[in-house]
Length: 288
Image (cartoon, rainbow, N blue to C red):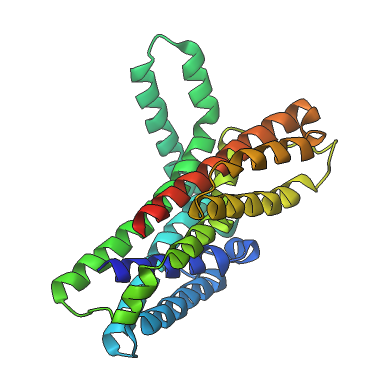
């Protein structure tokens, strides 16, 4: 059961993050279009290949498990594309999409008004930030829906009693090297995207007048490398070295952080980056 969940989860990570470029995301149209179909196909191929490797054979039942994951990606990502990619919609669909987003924002605003009915500052802030919060929630619920589908597939498979992992597979999944690799996989592009979502929500952006176009790209590379180092330090039992890494990064990026906007961007991004790496590493360590 655990082995199937891990296999499908890795397939989801690879297809949803590593095999899906920004250009492919922009090409996606709800329920139909080249971008969404390419993504669904890649999801199926990735899931089927990993399932075949994990359970040691090509069978029709594995085919259906991979198809189930791919169809779930098709449905969930089509709904997400409908909500956050208005440029890919026709006029009537845009109006419907705008009504849905507006409704989500009104619900959020209503909840906050009931909680802080006397606080006008909070009410104004919620009205101003409702759209960004809606986008963040759509991204979060998208990933939660994918996880829920994977859990559903695993529970259904357990009820059918189809698969018993081989001894070799159990040895691999019990290995610290496997969990370290999984932690590094999660800490790379998925973590970068999550940090970008949070920075977009809180509206923290670098000062482009100071470092035009270079900060986001360099920041992604630096962030990925520092998270990988944190994963390695935790898995080899040298968590104290993380402090040296924080100090080194502070010195290296001191000049970038000199501008007020850049200081907020670097500080928030760095703290999120370190927190994600530590949490993911500790969780994966517990699984060994």
